[in-house]
Image (cartoon, rainbow, N blue to C red):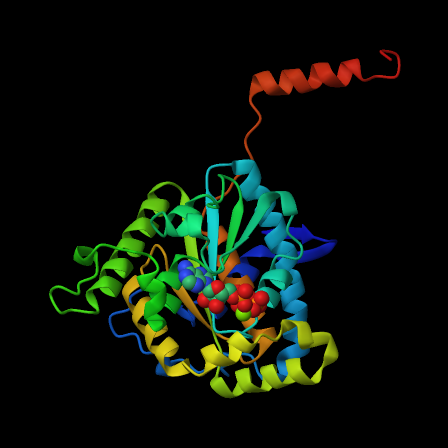
Length: 317
Ligand code: ATP
Ligand code: MG
């Protein structure tokens, strides 16, 4: 099938096949043997560095296609898509979201960023603040960080867990099993995402996988370039010092929560252009699997449209 997108003719079947191939290379649907070290942050898959201009062109097409498919998602009004982005600082979450969603109608898209919880948030269970931002039917919801922070930053910083004032029986401490709480949380998250799936919300999760060396380079750039100074925060350096703990927490969380219905994409993030191609490809692949249709026009509706046309003739005024 040929689709016209922004005046360009696109072989839809070919484009979707490519999106599937590019994205599936980085997809994790079963975390039993998941090792972060098996994933190279500098990987560019089947694309070579010299393909960068071609990849940028393909991304442009992908973004246009995405916007066409979003319109369908909106009109079909049965499914919603929830895209979760997680990463270490400077991995390019914001840029990836901005680029990939640049062609999408803002009305069909809702972005929520999750930072340190407020005291009101802390008075509730941790899903509470996220639930309020789940996408409506027909929309794409983007979570810039998410409930996964509860098994990442909170795991790396025990004082954050302390601030949640959970009763001892929920902490696993009594049994002397300090890791129980993280296993329980991952299991709960897995079930919750399954619940979302049962309600028509398609969940896709992206870990932008950056190397420590590339993070160093990007931090230095933020320090050197006055236009980027505002992006730098001293806390970024403090979190970097816990790098290995974060990587272990990510590996454990991804391994425990990767499923067929809510897969993780471990997106190589050292090359921003490639990361964006993978993210766009994964979203296209997800939308393509939904069999989205424009609502069909009933006979009664067709008659109504005909009447309306009659009333809009110049003579009718
Ligand atoms: P950027 O740095 O690009 O602006 P960001 O997502 O890193 O984006 P920041 O304001 O720098 O935004 O950081 C938000 C911080 O809030 C992160 O360090 C994150 O780990 C923290 N955070 C998010 N959720 C929680 C949570 N549930 N509990 C504690 N801290 C959290
Ligand atoms: Mg930050």
